[in-house]
Image 1: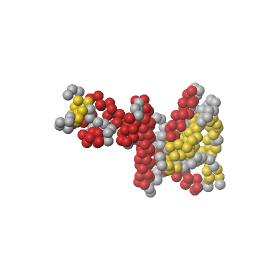
Image 2: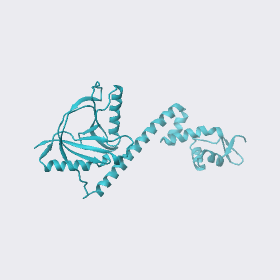
Image 3: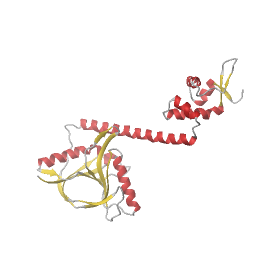
Length: 275
């Protein structure tokens, strides 16, 4: 018989086990092209490969074999399969990012445990800062990835109006991070200082940040370890008779894309006043 293969040969070509082919046949999902009545040998045609590939794609997309049988019977189109694949691809990518964020948090927690009793020394400096004219975006975003996404939105908006940053970008922190099922989230305002005034849009606000007295320190290293700088500032503020009067700020002095996070330099500022 031409253009047909024995079940073992077809299994090798298709990289599907003989047991799987027999199971699909039993379900009526994928039958041999020829069944020799004398020997009982099963033969599969090469042109059945495309049909089998549809089954395998749908299986990888998470459908049960019963659902696959129904979809194929209904004549699912290649266009629809492509759309389903793209949706599943996005879901898997989100799962990867969520788990990567989880691993990053675990690493940070382990680091803090290792550093117990070895709190790095931060030099705290009270300083007056000028007001800042900024384009900003406030949102509750994932701690990992969400903040950079906010900055990219602002940068794209400024480029569209041919406006360039006047000084390093900064964050205003309105809440502590909140644990959700999909990861850590935080209410944060990303801000980029500017000289010219573009129009507001639905998300991006142009406003003036107040100046005033700040308790300030410099942190070198990954953003996930900024909590140690915050803890040092809180302690200094309490010990020196001040109170916090506005959201803390993180000025990204050195935070270029592609830079090793261990080389990030961030100034942390707490707006303060006397008690």
